[in-house]
Every structure is written in structure tokens, then in C-alpha cells.
Length: 257
Length: 299
Image 1 (cartoon, helix red, strand yellow):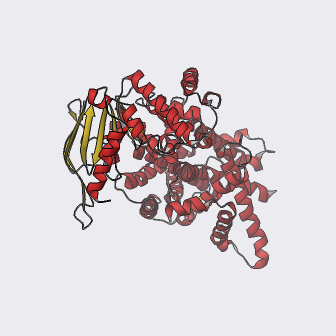
Image 2: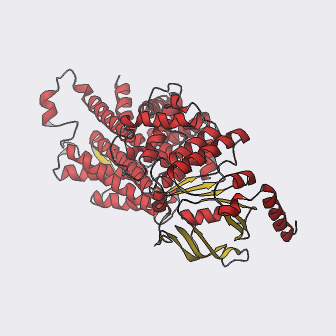
Image 3: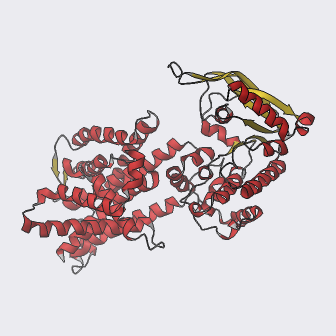
């Protein structure tokens, strides 16, 4: 159970440019839920993810995981149970290190990074198998530097790496936005497969309304730091893209554009 | 021949320091100016320790440890107090100038001629055949450099070494791996400055004295070595960067040495060394075009 309780978040607090993003924002996500989040630019989608992961501090309110208050916990500690995939495919991998080295590092998450050999040779077959499941031919390029791979290949690796060790939460920040439609489709199907296999609690921010409708069992629409739409279960299953578009237009008209 | 031996000797000493600069500049992408003071710190500690009767071999370890400590301080200032990378190095460099003088007993120049060193001691005198005697220093230096290089190569293949490479490559990933990126940077700076101080220690024992100004321009020399080596050998992907750095150090020393010997005819003298260093470094930067990325990142 992930809970955001009465969160306040201001940008440029105390200046003339002060902007209030969240005011008394609360949200709770049950274990195993797959939440799709849509919303216009600046509506607070990514900020919400950053608050959950600890990349940015909050001005008021608390964040809880399974009842434990993690508001003051530094970002890197929270990542122990969180896997995160970013919009930019370059964020999830090290370009100057080989595929094998990247996989080895991901495999050691949660363990001490000491003076033992960086790559455990006995695990190479396992890495090869996991890469094979992507169907991108990466299993034959173990000693190639990740920097020469395409965005789609890197993003697939980033997804694989962030879900390799036991985690509780998967945070997806528009992770298909930088990819071509076909690759995006592949990555999305892969995401769904991994989420189902590992029973991960997932929050996916996306601008693709079809993905938001097709995948996941709960849908949030954010606008000006509030969830203007929150459907789950049956209600979510009955949602159509047209309904979302209508809602979207309503929001935009409110804003006057 | 004497000139060649001289080039190799100095090349190897500075290669050890350049291995440290390779860590900060190439791996961490951290312009670390503290090497300018950790290099003479190694020399100061060595001179004092040898005069106090310490075994010259132990001074190698002592210097490395002291350098690593100074590197930690640079790292802590940068990471915990959130001071910019370049400024953290400058602060430590300035502070260490005074500390180095204190270590050397308040003197800017401490000779250790006629003391036992790693190059001249009873143990070696009894074992080195007289035919090899002129090459003793260069052989010992080669061996020490080789050990440093191999140890660094091995370290970079450990889990901790992977993390060090990752933090310069993509900090976000290190956080994603639930590791404190600041701590990794501190470790990298500690190793780098350990190497710089170790080089200073060896320099002191080879020259037979400590001198406070010996560190000025260390970082520039280190950067030049790293850039020359990596640019020169980048086509040969099977050559490790650490090997390239050592080759770069020797090539660089050869250039400086030639510039001085031939420069005499144009009225250059030994005092112009730093000027030559700077001009050579500028040339290398311009030719290698390595500056572009860095200028964007740090200017």
C-alpha cells in the first residue's frame, strides 16, 4: 500500500514566481494495482512520481509505504524497492559499459557493491535468457557497449534491468514516449508481461490514451495538481478513449485554450 | 641514452599520478584540482618520514593513505557541503599548501640525499649486478607503475569498480541501483588522490628532496598525459585506457624534454618549463578536440 497524505508542493516558494502544484493532495494505491496516469502538461504527473521516488522534497504531508513513513528517506534508499524507467532511454543504462556489465550491475541491486568480481560468470546464461525474451537479438551482443544500441533497445534493457531484482513498485515515466510506434508497442506488451509475472504495483504516466485505457486496472487523470478522474475495476474496464478525450477537452476549455 | 632514461623515469612517476587523474577526469568527469597539492603532500610526508628513519617502502603506503584521505575531504566538501567540483578541489589545494609546509617541518625545501630510499638501499646494492646499475631506477619505477596499473584494472572490474564507472557515465542509474552516488564519488576521489600522493612520494625519493612548489601544474600534466595517451591509442581498442595513460605520460615527457633541449637555442631555459607545459597542453586540447564536451559541461 502506497499512500500520499495531504501533500503540498510549491515551486519557487517565497518568490513572485511562486507556483502551487499540489495543495492537500492525497492518493492511495493498493498492492498489485496497475495505475495509468494521464493529464495535460504541467498537471503534476511527473512531479507525483518524483515525490514518490524522493527525487524532489515535499513542502508538507507524508508519504507512506505499507504504513512506514518514508517522507524523509533519501532517494537512493527508496529505490531499493522501486524500479523506475524514464522517458529518456539513456537514463536507465550506462552507455560506456557493455550490455553484460549493465546487466551484472542491475543484478547486484540490493547487495553490497564490494570487491568481488563485477560480473558473476555463472549468471551469464541467465542474463542471456532474459535478453532473449526481449526478442531484440541483444543476447548475442553481450560485450557491446550500450551506447551504440538504439533507443528502443536501450529502453527494453532499462525495463529489464529495473525489474531484475525483487522490487515492490514499478514507476514508469512516459517510458514509451521517445520510441517509434512499433517499438513502443513491443515495450508496452513487455511491460504488461513483467508486471503480471512479478505482481508489481505499477504507476505508469503516459500521453498515449490508448495505452491508458488498454493497460492497467485503474486510471487517473490529473489536472492542476488534482486527480479529476479516478476510475478503477469495472468502471475502468468500461472506459473508452472517446470518454477520456471528452474529459480532456473539458479541462482544456476550462483553461481557456 | 641518458635523456631516454630520464624521460622514462619521469614518465613512469607521472604515469602513476595520471592514473589518478584518469579516474577523476575520464571516469568521474570531475575536474579535480586537489592533485596539485596531494602530489607534494606525498613528497612532504616521504621526506619527513625518511628523515625520521622510516622504511622507504612503507612511505609508499603512508603517502597513498594520506592522499586518499585528502581526496575524501575534497569529495566530502563537494558532496556533503554541495560546493562545486572545481571549487572543492581549489579549497583543498589551498589548505594543503600550508599543511604540506607543516608536514615538512616548516621548510619549503627538505633534502634527503644520502638517506636510504626505494632506489638506493643496502638490499638493492647487494643484489643488483653492476651492469644493470644505471637502469635500477627505471626498472623499479616500471615495476611500481605496472603494479599500480594492474591493481587499478582489477579494481575497475569489481562490483565497486563497476559502480565507479557507472557514476561518471550515468548518475541516475547509480541512484536507481539504490546506491548513494555521492559516496561513490568520494571513493573515486580518494583513489585518485592516493595515486597522486604515491607519485609524489616516489618523485621525492628519486630526486632526493621535497620542494613545496613541485605540485604546481600537476593536474595539467596529468590531464595532458591522459588525453595524449587515449587519443594516441584510441584506434587500438584492445589496449586498455590505463595502458594508454602510461604511454601518454612517456610521450608527454618526451615532448617536454625535446622542447627544453631544443628550446635552448631559442633562448628558452629550465624556468620556462611551466610555460612549455601550458602551451603543450593547450595544443593537445585543441588537436584532440576533447575539450568540447567539457567546455559545455563546466564552463
